[in-house]
Length: 257
Image 1: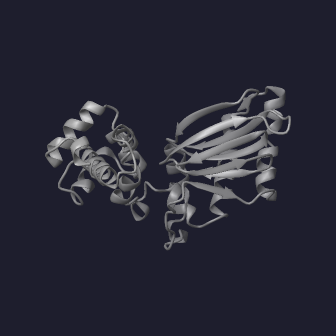
Image 2: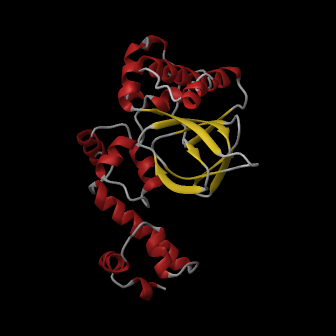
């Protein structure tokens, strides 16, 4: 990816990403945490969180980076080739959505610098070569931290993401049922079945209830305006928020203050 002008976007990863910076600056904001990547920096971004990406020039050099996207299809093929007996059984999926790799590591530099000729010459690399580069990138991650096994192969039952932990962290986000299922490493049917084991409410009603509970606590604290609270907890419509709030608490948000 190249960019001569600063640009910013809200990016929701549907695939795990390994990003390497050739030049410029990439600012990654996840909730209130801001990480800035520059020339030679490399980072892994998990697929189950929304991040704000700002791409811009830095010290007179244009933004230039490469993003390796690890799709579920690619990861499943790779996983099926692994010796399951050699997998780290104590691997645990980290709650951190952005993992910054050590700078100037020889294996990282070797991989990404070997790809620059294809950008500069305009030659299209073959599918076989791209698969080799993706595999090399995957091994870089796995050799960095064994816990990344659990993040990368989270479609496998031993590392299935805890549903309620995910929901608590993401109830303010506008996610479809399909996205909830995908981000927790499940099919839609499995997600619904597993969710029913931990809640009496279906997922979408649980989200509404959780948003209202969060809104109620904020209203009672008196730290924010009702309108701000409405949007901060995930509602898109003030009228819908007020109606749902009154249905649960018996009064309008304004009368709870």
